[in-house]
Image (cartoon, rainbow, N blue to C red):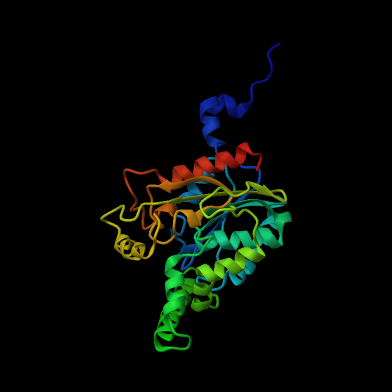
Length: 303
């Protein structure tokens, strides 16, 4: 007598079922935004533009978090940790896969260092593990207590406050603490305290695992990738501060952490998370596909 046919397989077919479970990781995926980021604006505009939906369509359980837009890595990391503890408690998953963009990748590193028992993997995207030249420039050229520093701090803190209110997650802001954290000097101090996943040489591969936590990273080297995106011009100007190829905000080698999936995608810093409003490099990879492929990679590792 024939074995009973699985109802779902009978209904949708093997190929369709494979698509539905392509990104179905063992542990939930937690998306961590970067500086000046947000979970969702007005409940409509996602920081990770449409990426959570793309992952869910492949079977992943996905959560987006919200931390202060401008603050030190440790302060942002503590805010992230509280949300992860809540996610783990509510889902009963035991652990999560952290995926952080830019400053969010450093927040994720902090959480993995202080609570490795809650973390299955950390993936950083365009994160300045050796510091960002723009932050270093500001740190070196803004006089402590001077007018320029005060004006920049006021404007950035005001922007952060507005973004936090519009996204429904009001939080205190400290722009100069963020600048210090992301500067080369700030990252040297951070890396001395939390070295897990860092390469031995600036542009090398880092260890892919430590203490049961897997490490991955990727980044881009595109700058002006869409004439429709008003932020691309800013990236073009900022990139002049950098001595290596970069995504308009973070150097290629500075982005290296753990297993480097790729460091030269045709994306700029916002393309990496499908921003701004989907104005990305049409001749480059689709960010949603890159995220889905990585979820499949995590799935393959049993994460």
